[in-house]
Image 1: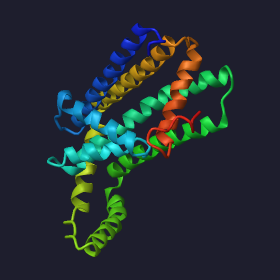
Image 2: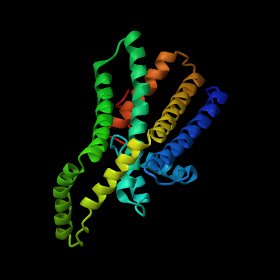
Image 3: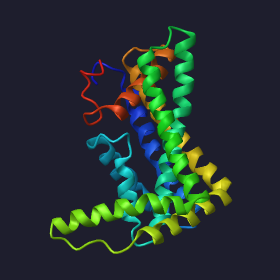
Image 4: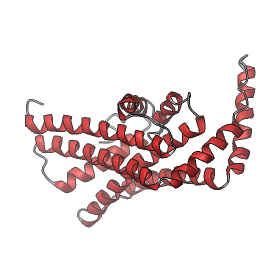
Length: 250
């Protein structure tokens, strides 16, 4: 840090903090979309908690979602799950927007590596899968029930073998709540768009922080900075080690 320019590094730290604040508003709007109230000052600790879980658990940035659902357990579980899923969709789709722009810059300048394109497709498929789950819960909740009942039975069998009490029936109630929440999201497109907008701002803030750090150490080529951020984030998401170990990615 002593070798770099101090002012861009300080601004980068402040910009990264702005990312977390934007994400806290995205969480708030995600819960608002399912008629649940969570103030941004209450969702900010969730942002740091989910970031921590996503860092230490290689899970395509999905591990932190469980923290949101657990925190909202006092509410309807289906609504909490829908809000958490919506939040993750906005986060990944916002990054996918920047990724597509970054890859387009790469393709038009130095060329696009097939490996990077493959990692990019993983993100697109992930976003598509989460949207499909939301649509399925809205259009065909009975099918979701049929899918989850065998899973619930398996969990109870495992609990019994471990000499634990089986879980109370939860599938029908949760899916009904999830379905109603999915319908609320469809009925609140403006609030959903606000959540996505906040997630896009958060991704732009993180990109800006990355570029500022690069600028502080003499890297001033916009294409390299944008594409470097995209590739680094992709590797962090799909790495089998927590957030990557650096050597492997290099």
